[in-house]
Image 1 (cartoon, helix red, strand yellow):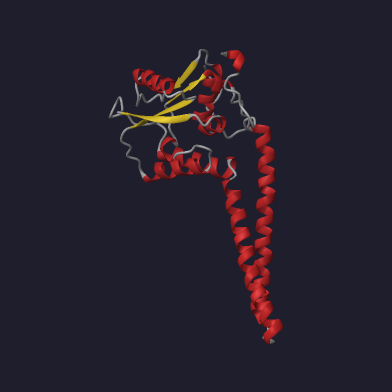
Image 2 (cartoon, one colour):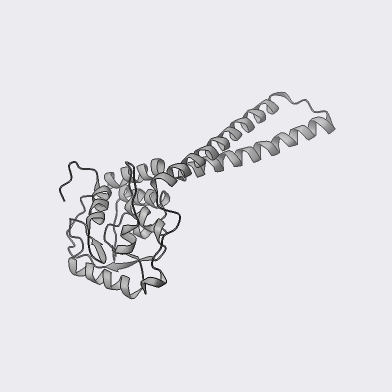
Amino acid sequence: IDLMRNSGQHHATLCGIQHATGNFIITLDDDLAHSPQQGMQLLQFMLESNLDLAYGIPEKRQYGLGRSLGRYLLYLGSSIGTKRIAGASFRSMTETLAKQIKPEGDVIFVDDLLTSVTDRYHYKTFVNYRNSSRSRYNGTSLWNMGLNITFFYSGFPLRVLSFIGLSGSVVSGLIGLFFLLKKLFFKVPMGYTSIIVAILFSASAMLLGIGVLGKYLYRIHGNQNRALPFHVRKTTEDQ
C-alpha cells in the first residue's frame, strides 16, 4: 500500500488492518525488534487463550524518560487496561475484531479503538529478535502522540476539570457556610474573606459547568467517530 502522504504510524497501521485479508492479522514494527516466527507464536498464544487481541512486548524494557512519560500519557488517555501494552505495535488480532473498527477523524490511536471493542486481550513477553534494534518511533514522537491522545482525543482533561470544579465548589461552599453561621449566630463581620470565598465558589462552579458541558460534547463526538456501543463476536448461527 502506497499512501499519498505520511499520516503517522497509527493511521498507516489502521490502513493496513482495513486492507488485510484472512482470518487473523499480525502487525510488526519495521525495525524488526520481533521476528515473523515470534508473530506466529503470538498468534498461537492468542488462539490457545481464546483472545480477540494479543500483544507481544519485550521481556526487558529500558526506556528513557521521554518514552516512559509518552507511554504513560497513552495509558491515561485511552481505554487500554494496562500500562505494559501502551505504545506496543506488535499485535495479533482476529478478523472479527478488525472489521469492527471504523474510526474517523485526524487523531487515531489504534490500541484504544481495539481495546474499546473487546475486553479479551492480553500480552505475552518475548526476547527481542535483534538486541541491537532501535525503534524509529523515538521518545519525542511517543511523547507528542501521548499529548495528542490525552488532551485532544480522550475525555481525561474533562474529568480532571470536573473533579477540580466539584472539589472547589464543595470546599468553598463549606467555608462559605462556616462564615455564614458565624455571621448569623456570632455577629462576626465578614470582611474580605467572604468576598474571596464567594469568588472561589463562583470560579469552581464555572469549572464544574465547563467540565460537564465538555463531557457532553465529548460524548457527541464519540458517538460520531468512535466504536459502536456493542460488538458481536459470533452468534449461534455461526457455530
